[in-house]
Image 1: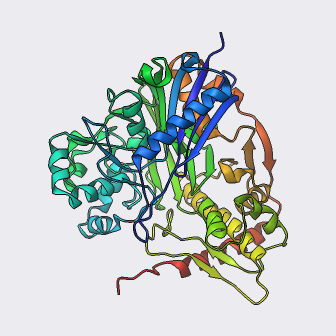
Image 2: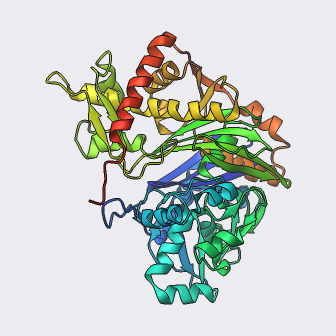
Image 3: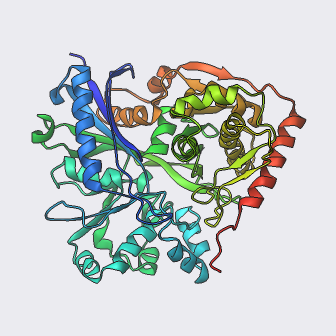
Length: 498
């Protein structure tokens, strides 16, 4: 009897579910958009109830598309938008506040306070993270500061915290499992990544009650069981990882030195560093990749806040294109950007700059500039930002990169992938299955229940769709990158309190 794994992939703009068979092939897919709420400039919120409902609908659609039921599932794996912060009532299971999305800058003043108090180095040493509003810690603290009654209930253990995977596991298990996998825990800015435990000093520093926190668990083990009333069967939840760690696993980057980039709303580069938590000297993040069979492995990460979102802005904000897919032919209609550089710091800059006051900048405009030049500049900006992060990674690790594995929606854009290879000077490799985030969650769950023997078997499933080779001279590559970095400097520090 054929066995299947269901991967739940809850992202920033949609909830998705994919059924995989034992060969790692897609057998059914369901997807529904999620709403984003923008209460103020720079704030991004979501409704946790909407996340749950769209996830359920996506799961039902995926099972129907595969022609199977919950009884045919060997396991369920979950991957999720990380850092997004949800608080809910322990008894009713209802959210008690809007979910604060990873993109939101509303807690930047609390980060500034951490810096003023001289605590930044301590946070980075313990968590591997550069303090930023991006992470969950200040989001929790901010919510508790706004509501004294909410704080009282949290201290009494009546209000629970979780990132999205924790929320979904709680709901799927009927409230029986309040857990978080260590890859997601490592993104909260409250987790000691070497002790692999919540950090009492950091919890005390932000006055966050430990009673709110989920129990940390590994990435490929029994995390809970889905209530039979939901899928018609008690299916084990056996795998969980934050979306970027799941993509690293789905790309079969199992050896130190292998790297992947996921091109989504933002772009996220991870370089596997093995069992060593490499401290960054170049403002990157040191994060847990996964824990399997009690062995913890680590990665260096660079988070770019706006890449695919820049294309969405061209579509929705400027009306340059009707569909995101139209950007590639429009950009390809010109030989280059005509000297235009676009720094898409629409919500500030992430790694390696970490400048919340930076703002989007278009430079080099002339009377001859067309929408095609701006579209080309937007694609080049994605590739330039990726190069900045990979330069920092290779400096931290002290070894060059041999290739970059790519996935995510924009990895289908051949022009972008060629620009990326040109600017990196190493091959860019796109696999046959680019749904690597969901695939990684499925692999983790399948390993836990014995559907696959080991990582060697998983690596054998990974196949190349296309390999993009660099095609420009070294001096031209470096000239372009230097000009880009001049543009980035001009975008920094734009927002000032005066």
